[in-house]
Length: 325
Image (tube, rainbow, N blue to C red):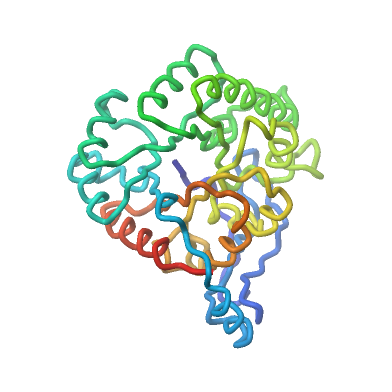
């Protein structure tokens, strides 16, 4: 599940659109504590801003599409509707065409009850967001058992609480805190692997802040370096990567074996989350870079969908069903 961790953006993103069609913003960080946000959001502008020859080349490349069985939606998007009527929400998702979902909690039900509600509409929770922090084996084991009951393939950490809430001990240097957390992810993944479940890490934007005690590195750098590639993968939230000034394509190219899942979340010209397919992010460019990287799930999410969540679900499904690269 995703929430907004701070605010930092240029006054007018439209002014940053270059001739190549990218929203270019400086990546200098405004370090506002461990839960701050990187100074300027960056995103890809609308494809129409690309030169004619680039658009022509793209039209000739349209040989790839998102596999039908890789389409999913993060249920955090649907949380308001689920609280009001879980069954009707699942019925609506199924009617749109979804078969996979990523859960972010059971909404007052047990894992078994939640699975029964999904089963009634032929929905399958193949992934879920679970907090591994602070790591405690018996607590984590219960989460694994719930995920196994649901039939999940993935358990993904959405953001450790010490970053989201600033709970890190002031006596522990940030680089050491991230290193210890990487160790915890490895431990959690070892336990989950016994059940045939893979552990992943989902980014927001604070992970990309330079560390106060080692400005040459970020928390994300440490996770990539110190988690075991055979145990821990990464779920790339495309919006939050851009928001942190990171080009998702460059991340994919630099670490081609580490990413297994996408969060397909759009951005408006002000850097805010918007409905999928209505913003400035060029998803085709990102998906093209990942064509041969084995991305297993393309998961729609809009944190701020509210009561319009079913429309978000429809727009997202249409986007993933029709996009070509």
